[in-house]
Structures are given as C-alpha cells and as structure tokens.
Picture (cartoon, rainbow, N blue to C red):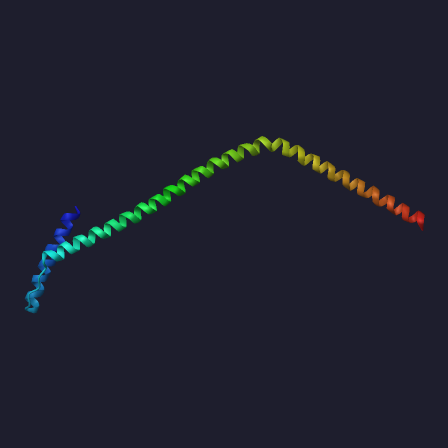
Length: 121
C-alpha cells in the first residue's frame, strides 16, 4: 500500500538523519511537517498523473471509435463498389468500343482529307 511505503520512507529518512547526526555531531530533524509535505506532493503528483492517464485513455478511445466508424464506412463503400462493378465493366467495354470506332473514323477522315488534298492539287 502507498501509505505503508510513505511511512517506511519517513522512518528510513529518520534513521538516516540519526546516522548523519552521529557522523557530523549535529542533530538533524525530520519533522512531521516534512512527512505531510511529502504526502501532499505525492497526492498532487498522483492526481496529475491520473489526469494525464485519463486524457490519454480518452484520446485512444476516441481514436478506436473513429477507426471502427471508418471500417464500417469502408465496408459500405466496398459493397457499393461490388454492386456497381458489372455496370462499370459494361461502361468500360462501351468506352473501349467507342475508342476503337473513333480510331477507325479518324483513319477514314485522314484518308478522305488525303484524297481531297490530292484532288485539289
């Protein structure tokens, strides 16, 4: 638990302060206010981290929802494409036929123009 860890940290700090006071021959205190300040800081820190985590969670959740929505739209578009595929193939054949006919007509027009130019000359 967090409280147990914080209490242990405070006790360890007190023991370390005793060791320092023996080493330096000067009393070092770890007042309860320091512990309470530490707890306040820890609470603020965890509150900020929780808010950040919630924000990231919301962003990810929104992203997943958008991806699901787009996946549904893609499925609808695929089905429409499959519905229109036969008509598109028919139109493609018509366009190919029209292009072939246009090439034939172009050749005939070129031939006629050539004959007219020869006749005029």
